[in-house]
Amino acid sequence: MISKGATWNSNSCRIKFARRFVSALLHMRNRNTRPGSLTIEGVRTHTQRIKIAAYLSMAQAVGSRRAWSRAVLSKHGSRARRHSRMGRSSVGLKKTRVIRSYPPGELGQAKKLRQLVPGGKTMDMCSLLEETAHYIKCLATQVKVMQTLADNFSK
Amino acid sequence: MNRALPEMSHCLNGPGKCTDMTVLERQRARVRWQQSYLGGSDFGGVFLETSQADQVGNFQDLVVGGSSCSVLDDVGTHSVKPDPGLENGWLELGRLELPNMGFGSGGSMNGSPTGLEMNSSISKTSSCPPTEAQSAPEAKDKVSVPAEKMSSAAGRDSSKKRKADKMQNTKVFAEDDAKYKRSKACAEEGESKITTEQARIKNNTSTPTTNNRETSADSSKENSKASEVQKPDYIHVRARRGQATDSHSLAERVRREKISERMKYLQDLVPGCNKITGKAGMLDEIINYVQSLQRQVEFLSMKLAAVNPRLDFNIDDLFAKETVPACSADFPTIGMSSEMTNPAYLQFNPVQQVAACCGFEMGLNSPDMALRRTLSTPVSLPEPYLDASCFTQLQPPPTWDADLQNLLNLEFHQERSISFPYQPFTGSIEASNLKMEI
Image (tube, rainbow over all chains, first blue to last red):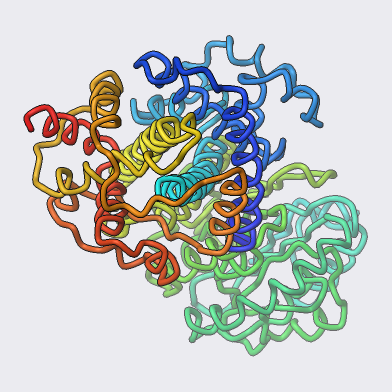
């Protein structure tokens, strides 16, 4: 379950993510033609939007298979609800539940990890680690693609 | 010295205590009993034989999996695996056929009824070939307790409770949900168990409460910690030797093993974690890695944001290029704040007029090109988070593809690409600081 088909998985993941991300970037660029983008605020906003687009694209590429992708999708877009096949609209509700007491006896690191991994607040340690592994893989892919894009754009 | 398992007594409708049952009879009874339970329930009992010799009682584990036949396939494949493992650890023990009752596919049940200790293997299969059972009888004198091996073979934890001297212990059968990785993990655990008599005795004496230990030859009690389950949702666990067997600790152990398994996988994923052992350190590393990746994403999105709105991409060449030489110097790492970096970039964008960079016209087809390039050049992820030492060195990441390097003709590019990964978060600040000074 965890370790199967890592290479194939990352390739298809990467391709899907790249496609979505680039189209999102294009969309944003076409939309964002005002000159105000040179201001600090403009750049920051643009940065944020690109960042969100990156995470969203990755989550969409992963689909609803993973808890963290579901969490990202539900947090960030109404588009997510359309795409989400699992009907996990309750994820948002779950987040409000206090789960500090839920996982017993873990160190503060687990808490921190939960904050880092989307949707990690409501998971037990076991699934948290699993989601973290998949999340790390996808993040690494994301970084690679973005890096290559940035390199190419800046040539 | 005969004991009867309570389960046996149930199913046999016979003697509550097998007083004079011979080994053969017991075997047969077991087989019959197991067959009656085929396909449905799990049999959580263990029956031990009194060893007539003065050896330490070995016992057989019989695991009868009540799982569906689909499990058989898994077990069949799994059963092959533990055999070599079994051989290793249990040199002195013969292979028993009897326990094959557990393995429906007649797999790794080891039983060589040779009068030596018998290993019993556990499996989830539900069928027990009667023939083997019958052949087993002569081996019944001693039963060994290779529980772990077996269970590991089958992919389950095995518990050994050993009785001192000639007693038997009861065992808990564990049934896994046919996860391959579990069998692997169990195999590793199993091999570490000791099988010497001394060890057994010691363990026997040390086993906690739920063990029934009898030193007298008269009666035997079996704790059958049967995790009976009609449905496959339950996770059957076998308590390990010398450990508590109540359901809570078993569940705890399963949970712990799952967690450690995942930690191992994470260790492979996160670079540079090979030396770190221990959960806390690993968690720290993981957290750092995730944070660094997220910061990289932010940094790259900032870069893309600076690049994106400009329709003529000649210029965007980058502030990155300018910052490269700046970044290459050593800087004390500072926490990054986007506010600081933005003004820096903004200042220098107009200032840096391109320069040497070969900016090419990025028309609308650029995204396609970029995409194509992205897809065709597998970029290996540099390891920026790795350490502060990376910041001070500009070693080309060994993982960069040759293709990618072709793309990056200019030294500038190379430096930039190299340095950026190392300093995704701090580079921007340092660069901005430098620029301001300049």
